[in-house]
Image (tube, rainbow, N blue to C red; front, top):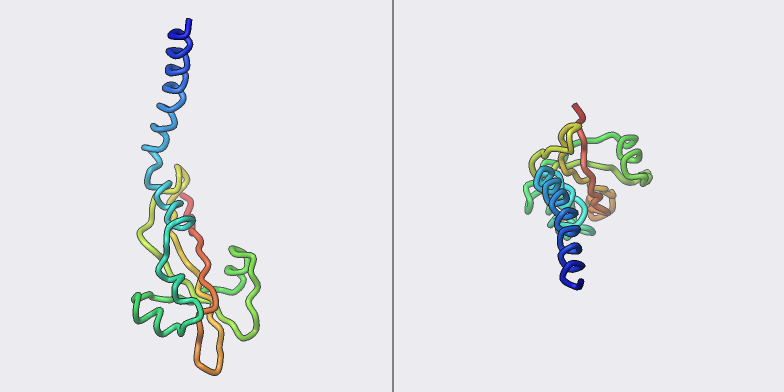
Amino acid sequence: MRTAIKRLVFVVLLLALVPVGFVGFIYRQTLKGIYGYTIAYWPEDAYKGRPVVELQRDLGLDLEWCSVGGFEGVTGRDVKPDERVMLFYKGEPYPWFPIGTAQNAGFVVIQNSTNGEIVVDILRTAYVDSL
């Protein structure tokens, strides 16, 4: 009787794990990308409170202009009058389930101060380009 219960539990777990493993294998690039912008360490985070020039020089980031409205819509954070926002892309585009591709991106919030432009915050996001 105990052997039959153990065998039944083993079969049920196996039947549950095989589809999960299959789905994980199919969407591994998507899962890797999600991990990249949610959990993984970004070296850019270490530059909070430091000049923007250091961020660009040390990491070689190409900061691009982005609209304040788009930034506020994506992040829900307001931009103060003495701040501006720039955008950078991180890594390569990856498949986003069956609907398109995504790419990890970061918003750099820059504050004008007497010491020049200082990085106030770096916010992570992913841009999804649907088909």
